[in-house]
Amino acid sequence: MLFRSRKFFKNKKKLLFVCLILMVSLTACSSPRGNDGKTKVNEIIASETFTVKKSYVNTTDVPEEVKEQYADYAEDDEITIEATTFGDAMNTGWFNGLIVWPIAQLINWIAGMTDAGFGIIGTTFLIQLLVFFITIKSQVSSQKMQMIQPEVMKIQNKYAGKTDDRSRMLMAQETQALYKKYNISPFGSILVMFIQLPILMGMYYATMRASSIVVGSFAGIDLSNTPMYGLQHGEYIYLFIFVLMVVFQLLSYKIPQWLQKHEKKKQHIKEKKYAQPKNNGGMMGNMNMMMYMSTGLIAILAFSWPLAMSFYWLVSSVFRVLQNLVVHKFFIAKKKAA
Image (cartoon, rainbow, N blue to C red; front, side, top):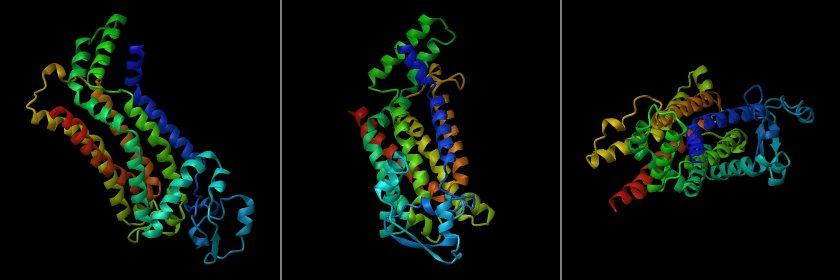
């Protein structure tokens, strides 16, 4: 049982990759946007009745009855969009009703008091705060996992080259005992991933469907356009936000490793040679591989997604950087000092 658990944990990056591929597949199947890149008029989620020019929305890649309704409208004519109720959203599927609709309405509510940009900032902050409180134990375990890497590598090197079942079982048992000693759940980060995945997908749809983003902006920037649009039209502020998002995404992953090195220097701990991985096959190598794979995939997706999503990832990454510092200071370093 211990060996099977260990094997599953080592293959966690494969699970992450499968989940990301699933996310890409699902989001590609039913885009709220038309072929012209505009949000379909029947996909907009509004918190109250409002009007929008026909030129701002897509009225061609929609059901036939909707297309006929707006066929005689000129590009400057105003289209009236009714408020979207919870029942309306549930009629189109449980995912739209339970995840997309609440996120879009939260964006609209906050944007109504400020603008579209602050709508995303406020929504992202509240979502990340909720996820943080739900998964705080898992995130503490994740940081502890990085802190004990030298001890994990010592066990791995002890059984290096031994492929018999007994040696593999003993390695799994010693690793499990190490996790128990430091009160670490090796599956904690998987819980975080499964909670964040539907939220990420929900945010993807909400940023394209929320009425405040369809007709709103942030400091003059149209958040419904993409970084690719910015590159094509020479509006480099889109690329700046995109690059900033990628940098903070990497930073949010690297912070725990830097905190670990800082803690060792602070305590004057020198890693012995046996604690150094001989190749990238160690757990740290796997973690770095996951970090670069996920960041690369996010960058590829974000380049053709609405800038609102890059904005969401940027705010989320900044939040995670601060979160890692808080977890380390109050849950890791504090316990070590005690």
